[in-house]
Image (cartoon, rainbow, N blue to C red; front, side):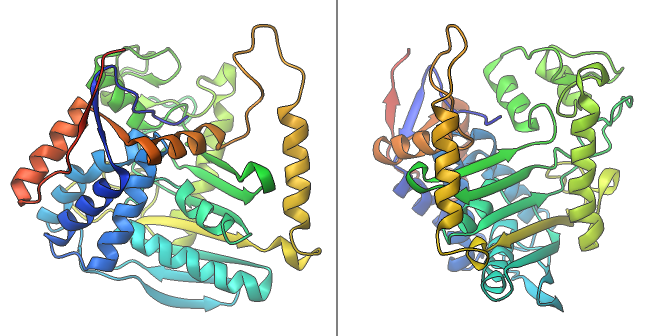
Length: 369
């Protein structure tokens, strides 16, 4: 479930200016302009879609990795070979976003020739929201799949310590008048970022999101951050073993298949003790090789029309939604009116602006609601 930045009190920043500022900030630490633009685009896209946990709020942590020498801001991904349908890239311990974009774009080009193609990436870093790369493929008329492993934060069913990452799954496809379907979800009950946002805002968390260090259910973000997240579904009795299974499948398709770090051997989230060495998976499928152009898109559009017109339960807050719809609507709204940042995130960005001598764009205060 996305982490929405919808503060009672905060500021708005123009998406254009926030993107430009992020590029300038990254160039201050020797990131080449094209790589800086790639990182900025993914981070601001996350903010636009209301996913505060993966947007510009991550910049401070990224810069710590660079300062500690465990992320090379100048490195470029290189293709290591493979076969027409399956290739692997080495990100050379550089920025995750441009490495992932290069791998996804390569899969797009090969899918045009072969109908489907997979790119793997190893020796890489956090790449932002998984959905951005799947959406990039969908904009080309393809079905896109994007997976990544992550630092161990989730306890396997029956365990009380974290052994697997939140290991997100993203799938996107063009859908005619609906734009596109975009499923972008963690395989944990919630992403760690949602716990972090709750901690910043002083909020409690529901039972089933996480366990404390002793394995008991946690209702405070502080205890949860010291313990482990629950796999999607929560406890064993409510189907948490399914989320555990999905996380393991993502792990075998990313870290294990790509030859990257995996499971409990991945360093902690944004640890400065060594390289992240994450593994990532991108698959592009061209449905037009099976039918007349846009036939798949038309069929998906028809299915979504039926789903969104389905009879509703009593007191439903609105019609049936399709995956990615709320985020797309939010992105359009914030592109026009500015991105909402909570006060804590804005203060962090102000600190970076002062430290690196790159003035932050002007803001507009949000009233209390």
